[in-house]
Length: 458
Ligand code: FHN
Image (cartoon, rainbow, N blue to C red):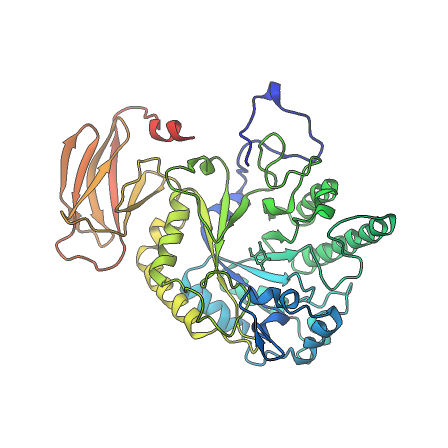
């Protein structure tokens, strides 16, 4: 449960709690916020078996196959002998993702299995010791940056390959081993931050075990260390714990890290969960129900349509959040067809309507069932997903706000019917666009407006 922010008087003193009470407002954070749309890349040894081990198909998340099939670490790591993504072309990936309209990419530098996509000098389990040999992470950072795409590093603290990793600390030996493990992790993080200094964000995962929670000091230290090494870098809330073992939000209900990263494969409710607009947040989602890494068989899972993905993106932005769409490339370096189609379809829509996504935020107007509002400075966007039978889109403004014009992005004006009491109908265009579309509202504020609706909900 998230505790709500308390008054200063009731706040308990915390050594490892939140380091600020408001949203971060420097340029780097604003850029993170403006970007709004990102992609996730889950790529590692698990992409080779693709959910199948010794002839048996496991339908759980492919990147967890080592656990499902109870494979020893040695046997799992022998997959490195087969790691040779000869079709991998970083520039091609960057171009495809740029076409999709993503402004940043989160790359799994190391997932739970422990295999590193960069030639880390702190473990033998890296791309350098595979037939491929070359630094995959470096190639991606270079290509994405050349295409103007920001790079974020996903990093799993939990590392199944490391003998000193512990999920719980039960003995003195465990505790000594875990201290070594934290040192190893610091080394890897410092290595990443200094070898790839254009990195914009560290996104931590695998931090839920009691071993990490009991070392709250370390989570605070990592945040600080990375911020000293990479000016402006952002860090997700999932890294952090306070001394009472609270994660994401500290014991005073304040967000730790720079943005909340708990929205995984789900989104806050646009009416009931408006409290999220108090902080920055980012959601991530898979195309099938729960596959992040490449799985050979998607037949038993519902796979989202481009329309649903577009709606998720707009839904997130309408509540002041970012959306990250996951891709799990094949081990040879190709994306599966479903993913390519997704990139193209989302990209085509973003090219036409991206104005209602990039740089946009929560608008503060009462949600209507035709879709979502977003806002960029004074412009309010209606993003219409459902067309009512009447062809009339109901809009309720805030007190003192009048609608002067409703315009399609091609410049065509739509008819507005004033209903009184801050309500209007905007008439659908004569030619139904046949896809989610955007109407820009030009508004006039009569006087200082108060966001009563929002205030009532949070
Ligand atoms: O266990 C991982 C999972 O494989 C995937 O990486 C997701 C991405 O958010 N994070 C973990 C589950 O929360």
